[in-house]
Figure 1 (spheres, rainbow, N blue to C red):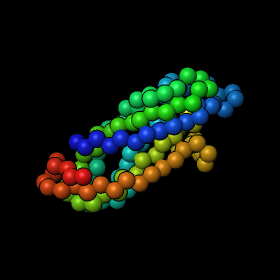
Figure 2 (tube, rainbow, N blue to C red):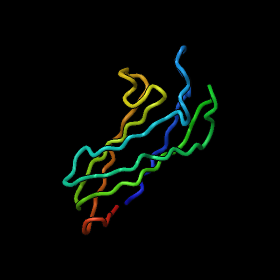
Figure 3 (tube, helix red, strand yellow):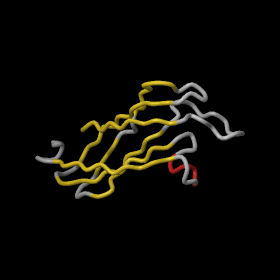
Figure 4 (cartoon, rainbow, N blue to C red):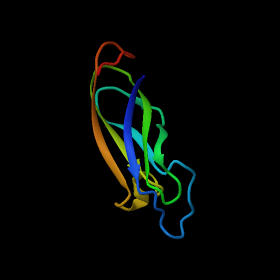
Length: 113
């Protein structure tokens, strides 16, 4: 497995009337966007770097362990969301995405940059 780390930040504000879910105030989900083989990613563990109390801005980092079934060029998609959930709960306000290029070299289970 290869570690992939992203840094996250959120205003940590919850819409009125919504219950506060458990911490952390952000979520990350990794998926394969393109590439020749199967990609498996663990659920990222979110580490708090600062803040995170109610109404206190949050910053942190999330690291997932990612494995590839075969060599090649991959594009991985990460979705970051706040308390509204993965994809903003249907709204376009509270999430962001990124695409990360990864080149896997060698045999199965061996990763490059």
